[in-house]
Image (cartoon, rainbow, N blue to C red; front, side):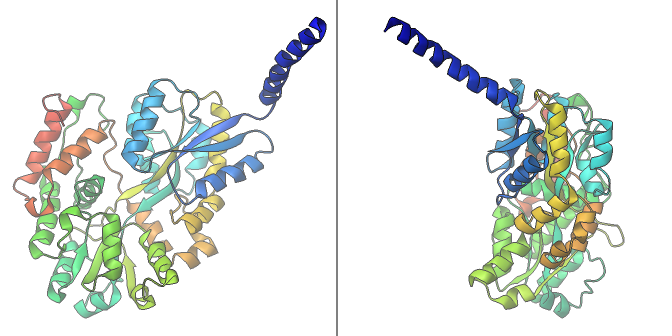
Amino acid sequence: MRRRAALLATAALVAPLAACATAEAGPPTLTWYINPDSGGQSRIAEQCTEESDGAYAIETALLPRDAPGQREQLIRRLAANDASIDIMSLDPPYIPEFANAGFLAPIPDDVAEAVTQDVAEGAVAGATFRDELVTVPFWANTQLLWYRTSVAEAAGLDMTQPVTWDQIVQAAADQGRTVAVQGVRAESLTVWVNALVESAGGHVLGDPEAEEGADIAPSLDTDAGRRAAEVIATLADAGVGGPQLANANEDINASMFENDETAGFMVNWPFVWPRANGAVESGSLDPSVVEDYGWALYPQVDEGQESRPPYGGINLGVGAFSEHVDLAFEAVQCIVDPAKQAEYFVSDGNPPSSLVAFDDPEVQEAFPMADVIRESLQNAAPRPQTQFYNEVSTSLQRTWHAPGSVSPDTSPREADELIEAVLSGEALL
């Protein structure tokens, strides 16, 4: 009995050791931390696992729904040198912070060359920090000017040509219609302000890539900053922003544009198109509403000066502490394959960073405004590329909200003063 017990004990010890040996002999598992979507990233992970021919397997881990929550979770783990983060989906504004902290593995030159070929200029700019590509563009996003064609025609606007903010505000006011913008005190407001300042030929920050916060000079109290504030003040004073202006976000505006009889114009991301068509399919929206949708490039601040639309989306970073950096970059190249980006656009509504992906027949059929999105991405301007972005954005939101209180005489100067004080350690948010 004693001999049998000893044999059983030995077998019990050997079994888990054998299992471990078997697990180690299999392909490495790469963990990809993804932002919530409609399942497209998980499908791509499965496809790339199969296409790797046993070199690696990709499993996904879900991040919080909102971008600040995603940033917080990743930063905390990377600050602890977490080796389980192989690939991560990153919101562009936070990329400089990750790069500056040394949380991103350097991209090999051959990879950088491959993943920037035929990629939208706005997406490459958003993936770059201090003149170095630090993340890989995956899907890109930009805002268009959406309009009711019946309203634009009644106003006599030629929407085949660029239009200005002043023109659409005047057209909406004349017809008792609205211009839907994101005026809520949140990141949406920073997106709007940055696009206006860039479209006016300026920048929110003078030297966003400076290493010390005290060396980053805000530059809103300039002609461009004051012109941006004038656009917001004009829109608010005209009363075309609607009663919800100070609380309006992307979803609220999309809903109002679908259902409100006073809808006229709206700046928003391309998700509004599949959203409206989905409502038609479910029977909650009359088809005639969507048939009245039109789209154009983001409005100009000053006539004849090309607009710089907002840029968003998701880039892919490889964790600096990953045990499989080389394989992770192989997987990333598979993930951003133009054919997969095109499929992801159709399935999840997230536009590709790859310019050639827009030529896919299914993309052209599902998104008749695909060519306008592509052109917009070429002109899009990222938000300030600084590791102190969170402080800059929060300061801007405090001084440019509510839209009805924005003034070209005070708002740009107050924003500069607060940003400067926060970055130099003289004020807290």
